[in-house]
Image (cartoon, rainbow, N blue to C red):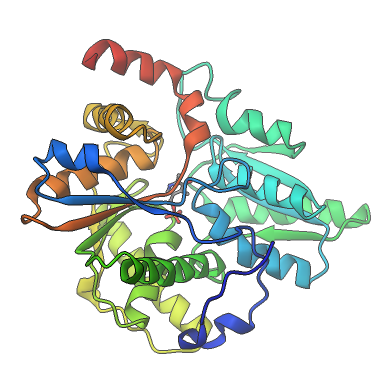
Length: 352
Ligand SMILES: *Cc1c(COP(=O)(O)O)cnc(C)c1O
């Protein structure tokens, strides 16, 4: 696929890093007029549609994977290894990108979510992982990023002994922030679209998990001189842990790119109001937000990530000043909907 024209000169080493383009152009930044009218049309709501990608249902991990696959190809790897939750969108998209690039993919699924839903282990992303022909492994602990990475190393050694050339996509915070770089490019795209559409964005709301999306976006905006606030909606950890994590991530990006870190401490905004009961499970407010977004804008949101960020977005919309322009960054996750059928049935009964 062709690279879209971007000037990355403000980002230090970024343009010199290996990258494989997995998107053929910018994603849409489009209006949400029906949802805006829920707030009496007094706010202007838009969505940045990173859920719409040509690669296997798309999502925010596509941008992140461009740099991992760039490095993997530069190292002449032929097999990708990655770890994630059972319903991880990241591993599904890694498997998809691997196929597009003629590579094999080994996926390690961590037991991060205690789920009774019969579809959680078979449908949604798991079904797609299998459809893509990835080799699945399981890891018993869902909160041990370093241990999970280490175990991937064991699998990689085994593959090497069989003649494969493995490349590991690491998830622990200490590793190079390659994923976040994809959202630097997204920041540039959003500023370009803001100009083209002649709008002034007052805030961007985004799910904050590993922090690659949140951190990369915030970093990219600030480097480019934009002070648009980015509100991170916690989907994995409480604000008390997530805030420092995002700050660290921004510093890591700066160190990695060998440029100054333009992100001030109070640029990092995180909100964990919609996190309970925890990662991979949604409360009533979140399920209701999902239903409202579907029934006003036909947006497809999932209970783990985008349902929570939408609940946060709606909360911001209801408190925003008149004529504010708010952007919801839709990070994808669509296939996970099918893994949560029970949660959806319960929500239909409760809120129909
Ligand atoms: C992974 C993921 C997120 C969180 O992104 P991070 O970069 O890990 O913070 C948000 N939404 C969806 C759909 C995801 O798959």
